[in-house]
Amino acid sequence: MSDSDAVDPFSVNGLNTVIVGGTAGIGLAVAARLVSCGATVTVTGRRAEGESLAASIGARFVRMDIADRGSVAEGFASILSDTPHIDCLILNAGVDMFHGEIDDLDLDTFERVFDINTLGLVRSLAHGVNAMSAGGSIIVTSSPAGSIAAPGMAAYSASKAALDMLVRSWALELGPKQIRVNSVLPGIVESEMDAASTAELEVIRRMTANGVYRRAEEMGPVFQFLASPASAPLTGSMVGAHDGISIGYSHEAMGLIASGVDEGDTDG
Image 1 (tube, helix red, strand yellow):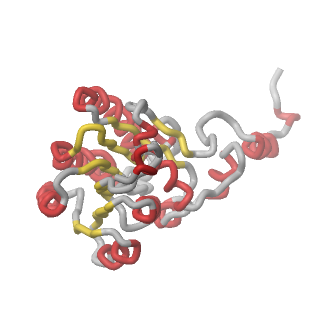
Image 2 (tube, rainbow, N blue to C red; image 1 turned 30 degrees about the vertical axis):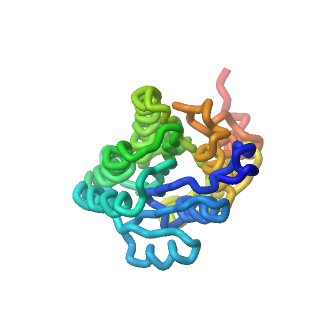
């Protein structure tokens, strides 16, 4: 570590970082950011093109399906064969799938959302945690959906709410080892997942305090902060990177609601 790194608490130079679910969207953008800042980064994913994507940003790729316990075990064995320890473990993998409401439920989809978003990250941490170095950082990608419900998206919201409680529990369990655990709650971010699963992106954008639709690259500095020593006092924290989507009603949202109300229909 150079003298400049020693006095820069935001430096991630030289940190061994693993990003579970790092071949698209936020995960890939964060990987690119950390590599550009000097971190050594390994990304995991299911897709064959993950290797070329990782190589394009200077990261290593390990194929891993977090819905498969054996694949997770093999993946981390491969990671640790080349990486003596992990300084930062980012648990980013997830899916966002509409499964219908309870009276017409696609149970297979419901189970898949939980199996990946919650159990998949539990499997990943179970295999990676013992390689974490003291002073290390675990970062979980959660969502404001963990505290905001929407019809037909119960599994996604519940899976993220479960993650938020796991972050708190893991922070307490790993605190004595000087390992901190936090989550990032992105809002509306351009990604393959949003485009594939959410038809109401414009409505969600209007729910943000400032009407912003973020690029995945804008999440990079948030994760960098949590990976760096600058975030040392934070553990068990839910870091909102959602432009205020969960804090109340924005001007635009209030306007939309008001435009649909006929004042002549009010009672009293």
